[in-house]
Amino acid sequence: MAIDFTLEPELEELRCRIRAFIDAEVKPVEADIEREKLDETDRKAYVGALVGMRKKAFAAGLWLPHMPEEWGGMGLGHVELAMVQAEAAKSYYGPWVLNCQAPDEGNMHTLLHWGTDEQKEKYLKPLCDGRATSCFAMTEPEVAGSDPTLIQTAGFEDGEEWVLNGHKWFISNAHRAGFAILVCRTEENPDIPQAGNSAFIIDLPHDGWNEVRQIETMHGGTGHSEIRIDDLRVHGDQMLGGRGQGHLLGQYRLGPARLAHCMRWIAQAETALDMMVERSLERYAHGSLLAEKQGIQWMIADSTM
Ligand SMILES: Cc1cc2nc3c(=O)[nH]c(=O)nc-3n(C[C@H](O)[C@H](O)[C@H](O)COP(=O)(O)OP(=O)(O)OC[C@H]3O[C@@H](n4cnc5c(N)ncnc54)[C@H](O)[C@@H]3O)c2cc1C
Image 1 (tube, helix red, strand yellow):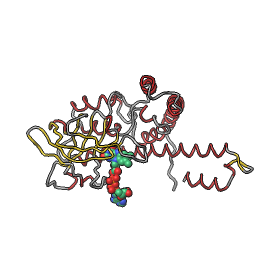
Image 2 (cartoon, protein in one colour):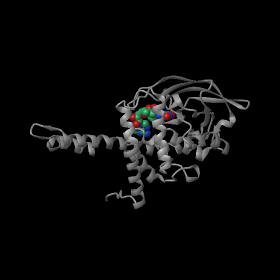
Image 3 (tube, rainbow, N blue to C red):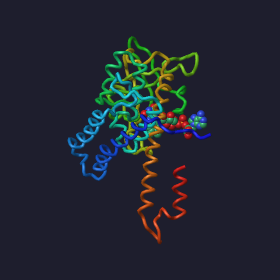
Image 4 (spheres, rainbow, N blue to C red):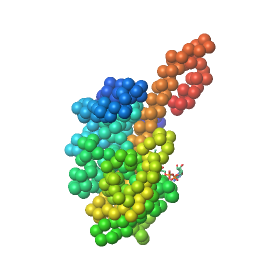
């Protein structure tokens, strides 16, 4: 039985709006940056161009697709969001322009569901307004990131404060984040292994939060940091969710965040595929266009699958 991926008419209309916006407003600016027509060292022009795209997205009602309307968002569900990400990420800046980029998108979702009113006002609102950046610090070099019950970064209570020590890596956006959501071990003998962690909101920069380096990944050379956490002191009010709820909160966050990541990668893969097809329809060699050669057709078919 085939799965029917046809979208409802109103969703198809939204998809077309996003595609048109990305094509008309984002891709041309991106091309200027790539061709160095827009000089990145001229900060005023560069930042002006980036912020200008965001203002246009806001005015077009294409802002915060993942947030409810009362937080200024589009109030979309998971299927719609997947579709939005798969359109937006056909350009490098697209998700950022719509303010649904990783890791802020997942952090907004987390704060919305787990933050106190004060935490929402202080941390969620600036993210929604596009005035703040954040990071999420869970993965550690010493243990498997796919199993957060192994987390070794640990905290102990000292009066009204917690003292945290540990080691994190691959922390996206950490080098420019205004705050981090940090997951660490706080419970020594939890009823179940998944109840050992808690999450804290850490204002950045912060004593005890030390960036070691940015790690090279397939995504590029920048943006994913290794962090040493040395005697970092944080007030108990900065805990996000309750004691022992860090794992639950992480799962709650990563469910939609992983889906969004996958859709962004699908968008990138589709862009690469489109470029390959376009090239094969333009390039003429040895008596025909590349597109007419059977070996090339096989490769394109394999890539499409
Ligand atoms: C570009 C990038 C950005 C990232 N950003 C962040 C971030 O902002 N914050 C953060 O905390 N982390 C971040 N991470 C880390 C990411 O979440 C971890 O890499 C991920 O959780 C996997 O952990 P690991 O790398 O330790 O691999 P491991 O957990 O050691 O996994 C190793 C291998 O085992 C496989 N495996 C794992 N579990 C199973 C299973 N049950 N069955 C079969 N195979 C399995 C995996 O697929 C993998 O191939 C980022 C990583 C990258 C590459």
